[in-house]
Image 1 (cartoon, rainbow, N blue to C red):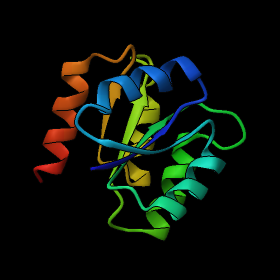
Image 2: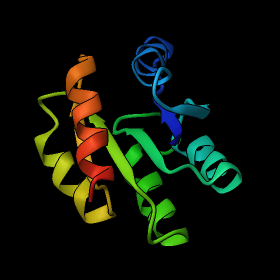
Image 3: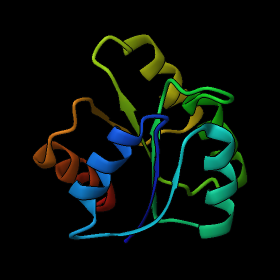
Image 4: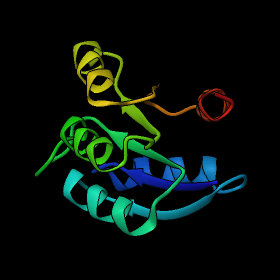
Amino acid sequence: MDVLITDDSGFMRDLLREILEEEHNIVGEAENGVEAVELYQQEQPDIAFMDIVMPIKDGIEATDEITDLDPDATVVMCTSVEQAEQMKDSIKAGADGYITKPFQKESVLEEVNSITAG
C-alpha cells in the first residue's frame, strides 16, 4: 500500500516511517499541509497520514482540500490526546480515522488495517 506521511516534526515522520515501511511503501513525506496536497496529487497514495497542527496550512485544511480533489481519499489524522475538538473538525473535513501521539506500532497498524478492511 502506498503511504504519504505529513508532520511538521521530522522525529514524528521518522517514527511513523519506521512503523509503516516494513509493510507499506512510503511514497512521500511532507512538513506542512501545502506540501501534503502537492504530494498527494503527484503520488496518489492509498492512504495519507496527516498531522493536525502544522505551519502554513494545518492538517484539517489540507484534508479538506485533498478530499475535495479526491472524494475517495483515505486520510488518517495524527493527533495529540488534547486535540479532541480538532478531531471533530477533521472528521467533517473527510478524515477516515486517527492515531494518537506518541505513535505505538500496534495501534498504528491496527488503524491502517481497520480502515483498509472497509
